[in-house]
Length: 403
Image (cartoon, rainbow, N blue to C red; front, side, top):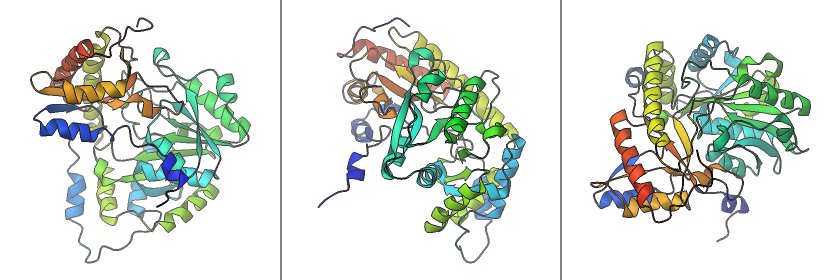
């Protein structure tokens, strides 16, 4: 049987495609420290399940396509606490941030159109774009430069008549980078000069460390008519399986087009919306404690990585990931080797191969992403194992440049 060119062009997930190796290792009795996926171990607020348990309607009916008003009002109040002026009518509830991104691509782009994205980027951006025949044009950033953006003229040179948007994750996945206000203003000026959308993936908004001030693209009034914010409860409230996100924009014409797509998929699950509404009433103290915990984990992980000869990484300032350049021939081979051939007292480490976070062929081959979603004592053990693995790996190479 024939398959579409679209699906054949899609890559498999770099986060999930090595799971069979992990399952095989576990079957052999190995303990794995799973640093490959951004699945928080923080407890989900009890209000989520309580709200669902207290749901008393006799019929679980369709929700509206744009999302329940109670939830949209709760999200609107949340944004206004950040001085981001989204009202109920500026919001459509989606099946996670993933559907919000897909809706954005479908609304902005025709097949063959282009979206600029700083690389490395969240690997599923490739899948979302390819599924609707949109071309990702990478803005290449480097580990040695903290994955910050190149000068404006380099980004401007990538714009073509087919460019429709610039997509940025801030704070960044997989890098943990937080863009400076100057970088944000630079992207805003390009959006105005070339009549582009800014798609701002801001699902890690609360995960900002070292006392840095968070700035949203929703804080830039000059581009509010072209800013599309993608959001989710997944990481903020440790509710990845709830699959509740939203797409937000002040441009009423844009949102009217998004609603047509939302109507085509009917609605987001009713019960999950009930639970998510309750999540938005979670005390700020919960998020403050979560922030402290992840900053502590960041400190533990980064301190260990800095001591490993030949390893290059920049201290992440947000989210809960770090992109690491390794003194190895191939990071994916190294991960598989750790799962199949290496352990310390029956324990090993799993990461996500870096190549899948790039659009430029050949980049990321020596990199992997670590998610510091385990407790500090487990991270210490995992980093000790990683250090020994790098020393023992038969494909280790001398680093080209010192850290």
